[in-house]
Length: 147
Image 1 (cartoon, helix red, strand yellow):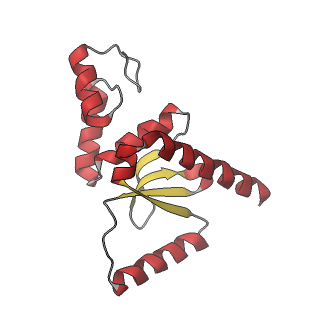
Image 2: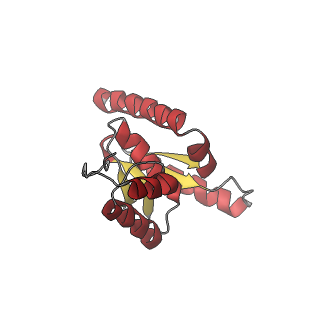
């Protein structure tokens, strides 16, 4: 049992606290760092869970990335992929739909791909979620090379 970030050996209690909170082994320093980040940036816990799920398969992402307009939950800059973690889909009014469409259009013009993933999907099926994101990244890498 070692920390995913620094390979520090973990006590049983440290291991258990990290697994219960995030599902991954983190030393107290890195667990507390992630807890502070979630609180400061008002991010859902599932952002950290997905971050470490991607890290586990070798995909480097950035937590709470500022894109100049807003904070992106997770960003994979090499392929211009932004990932937003959302609560369960709530019905949107027409103004919210138009705002989302306009934001998506501006990001698309800037060459970014945005995907939205619900918190429950990450909690219920992290492995398949990570596999699908890896597939999206592979496709985006091909597009980047083609340009």
